[in-house]
Image (cartoon, rainbow, N blue to C red; front, side, top):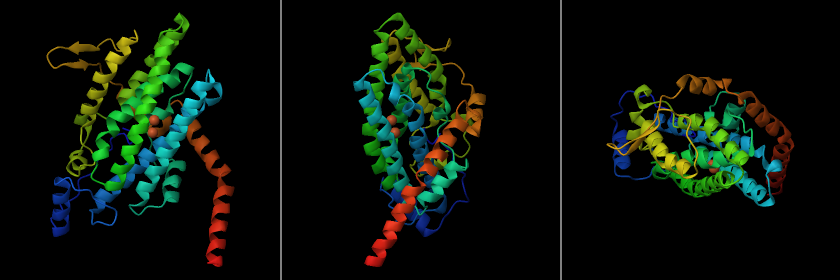
Length: 322
Ligand SMILES: [Fe+2]
Ligand SMILES: [Fe+2]
């Protein structure tokens, strides 16, 4: 998940009439809106999840942005530009949704730039070849869709509504990525080898996007009870593997997992163990590109200072004129 399926600490059970009414509304699939009563822990969980998601969209523009000037044709360049702009738009809807919970956008930006906030570990890996751009669309956006479709039914209205629009765009991203990989696989042996190499490097980090295994998730049932989360991390990861393996096999690609096999009995693709040490290292700031990504965001923020100042000066003038 772009918010890496964080878990919520269970606080002492709240038995107040408001809390009982709140849970009854959730159970009835009612949407909670910003001005409605909500438990503080629900508000905090959502602020954290939505802002991590927003940060992931914004940082996620960087690995692909690297290739805009090097896209192999005008058509590819136009599609990639549009995709990267979409991701910026996703960040904006999500920051706006987080703000309805009473947190300022400036505070969230500060958390990201100071390194206090997390974003998805996947964006700390480098994009080495053009095949990485296709593979990101196919796998990273594919994993994002798997996670985000259930969020369209999240109990918090502004988040759920933002996700409806985002999911439509993510599905275009996934298709454009798969089409790039398909073109490479139907090309020269060198192009196909490039696609295979990208799959080899991105496969395991993509499986990590769904967050830690269910057994290691303490208290994860609170998010389920509040209907912020609808499926477990392992459940979503399995859905992703089941959907993606046939797509890779159709292209004649192999997956970098000697244990990958189809289990007739369950109807699922079984996969080997995930390197959770790598996941923890990358999440803690020690991935291949963590420093570079934060530096790029800080520079963009500093370079944009004059725009924010000008907007504030304009707003102040308008107030005086009014
Ligand atoms: Fe996105
Ligand atoms: Fe996307």
